[in-house]
Length: 246
Image 1 (cartoon, rainbow, N blue to C red):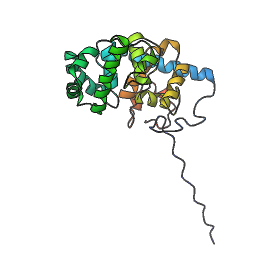
Image 2 (cartoon, rainbow, N blue to C red; image 1 turned 90 degrees about the horizontal axis):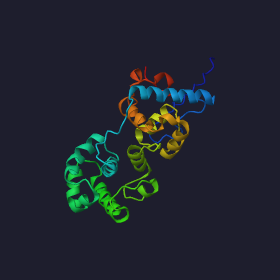
Image 3 (cartoon, rainbow, N blue to C red; image 1 turned 90 degrees about the vertical axis):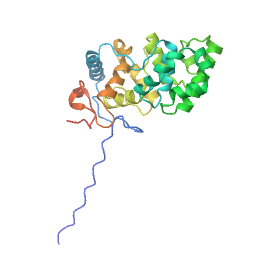
Image 4 (tube, helix red, strand yellow; image 1 turned 45 degrees about the horizontal axis):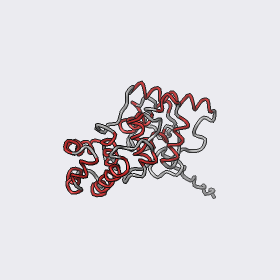
C-alpha cells in the first residue's frame, strides 16, 4: 500500500515593503548586515535620485509661507493637481489670513469644494487664519511646535513648510515617502514617525535638504503603489524589495 504523501504547506507570502498597514515592512535578514555597506548603498540611492532631478521642489503652487501652508493643509488625502486647481482662483482673491477671514467660510468652501474633505478643511483653514492673526500677527511661525498648534497642521505639514520655506533638514513623511523608504529599506518602519526618525539617521547630510522631495517624486512617478515601474527605476539594482517587477 502506497504511503500517503504529506501535503507541503504553501510558502508564506513575501512582505510588501511599504504596503499600507504593514506591521513588519522589511523581512528580517533582508539587508546586508554590514553598516558600511548599507551606508554606501543609501548614499548611492540619493546620488542617483539627485542626478535624475537636481533641483526637486514641491508641485504645490504657492507664493509665500502662508499660501504654502494653506495648500499643504488642503492637500491631505488629495492630489497636488486638484489643490492647485482650487487655490489658483482662491489666492487670486485672498492670499493672506486677513483676506481669507474677510472672505468667510461659506465663500472659502465654494473655492475648495472640488477637494476631498472640503468641509472640514475649510473650517480648519478659517480657524488657522484666526490663530495666525491672533497669536502671530498674521505671519506663519518659524518653529515646528508653534506650527503644530494650528488647526489642520500636523508634523508632516509642519515639516513641509519648514523644509520648503526655510530649508530645514527635516523629512515630511507622506504616503510616497513611507512606501519608498520601506521598499528601498532606507529607514524601514511601521509608522510615519518611525520612518521619519530613521531617515534622519540614515540619509547623509548632503542630501537632507531635498531628500523628501526626491522620495515623493520617485514614489509618485516611478515607485508606484500598485504597479511600480521597476524596469525604468534608476535605483532598481540597489533595491531589496522582493516583489520587484522584471
